[in-house]
Image 1 (tube, rainbow over the protein chains, first blue to last red):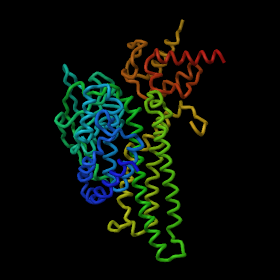
Image 2 (image 1 turned 180 degrees about the vertical axis):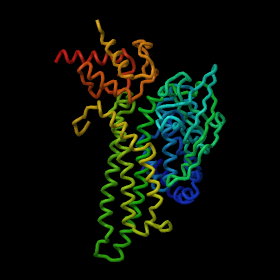
Image 3 (image 1 turned 45 degrees about the vertical axis):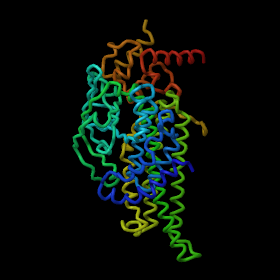
Image 4 (image 1 turned 60 degrees about the horizontal axis):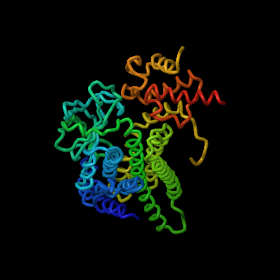
Amino acid sequence: MSDLLQRARRVGAEVAARHASAVDADARFPRESFAALKAEKLLGVMVPAEFGGAGASIPEILSLCHALGQHCASTAMIYAMHQIQVACIVRHGQQSPWHRQLLQRLAGEQLLLASATSEAGVGGDVRSSVCAVEVEGQRLKVSKNATVISYGADADGILVTARRTPDSPASDQVIVAVLKGDYRLEQTSSWDTLGMRGTCSNGYWLHAAGDVAQILPLPYADISAQTMLPTSHLTWSSLWLGIATDAVARARTFVRAEARKKPGSTPPGALRLAESMNLLQHMKSNVVAAARQYEAALGSAERLTALSFAVAMNNLKIGTSQMAVQVVNHALLICGISGYRNDSEFSVGRHLRDAHSAALMVSNDRILANTANLLLVLKDDPGLFP
Amino acid sequence: MTTVADMIRDIFREGSILPVDIATLSDSADLYTAGLTSHATVNLMLSLEEKFDVEFPDRLLRRRTFESIDAIKAAVGELLDQKAAA
């Protein structure tokens, strides 16, 4: 096991797990988990070694999301969202002196990055912006009515999408990286939800000012296709798999305890446990295959912006988000009332509530509609192995 | 004589592919900066396939193929050459 994974498992088991119930009950930022992740230097792990990071690969990052997801889904989701932002800077910021310095700070100071992509007035389409970057000399200004900035109040910096100029069409967007001190947040809505309560995904008016050098050089459309979309679906799927894995672990302990009480007779939940393991394997295969596909395409803008790649990543997200709920539901049926209780060691209520967010955060219907559109022109590759 | 570029421009005009008038853009202008969305790109491809009676293979179904009239002209030209040679 890699040293990184060992450290993440330690944070998960010793810190995140202990505070997961309180984070969920109070819908508060998992501050203990993030203090521990910072102390273990796990926030800047994706930063290349030349900037002081660990240069962690995508499979390593996914393993960390998976490990954290088994203990506190909110911690894992915030960790995943942070890594998606870091990935954008790692992949698309190295040509820019300002962003190279940011990479050093991400590794050195273990900064936590959030994102402001959602906006009021675009009908949930993050590939359109109302707000625009206004430039005067070397200074820029942007104000955004962001419907969601997850853990915005606790982040050290925010990646903001906006139209390139006040004259640009809605789809011509850039990303601006702003750091604490560059921006002011006015909270416009709160986050009292069924699950993923610790992500504190409040709405804010964001008012930021900075240097034009803080704009990432590549258009957002390219960053989105090449990095944000694949790393989102991969990291999220990994942590959803983590949620499902822990639910099945609880169900397995439950079935074993039953079996020990009556050796020689197979407990009623054993068959459903076998079924859960089957689903879990499907999920895992999906994540691993998509991660390999991403790794193979890395470094090739051509392959990363191919429609077939977008469809594959969309399918990963649709599949794992649906299966996560299915698997946790199986675990609930296996554990019965013990699983339904909130005060039992077999409780999977939080798992189920957290897992239900998967189909909604970037709505599966929206993703299916996007895939449906792409399939109008995409030809099918009939081969089994690419 | 109607050129391939003219026929491509007709598609933009008839299909309202862009939020701006295609006549205001040069052949080398960046269509994404002009407001071409990924959704509209699919409609553009369908219209190109219909008009030129060609099929875009998957390897051409990527963002850069449709970034300008010039780029589209190159892709369509390649497909028309292949068709003529077949």
